[in-house]
Length: 90
Image (cartoon, rainbow, N blue to C red; front, side, top):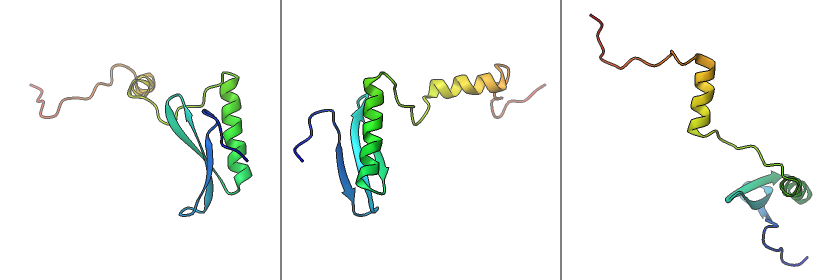
C-alpha cells in the first residue's frame, strides 16, 4: 500500500494501549478514532471522511462556553443569577 494523500488521514498500531488508531485533521483539529482491529479503525475513519464529503459535520466533543451558558439559562431561567458572596441583606 502506498503513501496516503493529504486529507486522507493515517492509521497505526498503538502498542501502549494495544489498539489501532486512525487519525485525520477535521475542521482544523486532529481527531482520533480507535478500533480493536485495523479494519475497524479504518472503517471509522472512512465513515467520518465520507460524512464530511456529504456535508455532515461531526458532533462537537465539548460544548463551548456560550453553548453551555445558553443551555443553563434555558433550563434554569434568566432569574437564577447567583448571589455575590459576602452580601448582606438589611
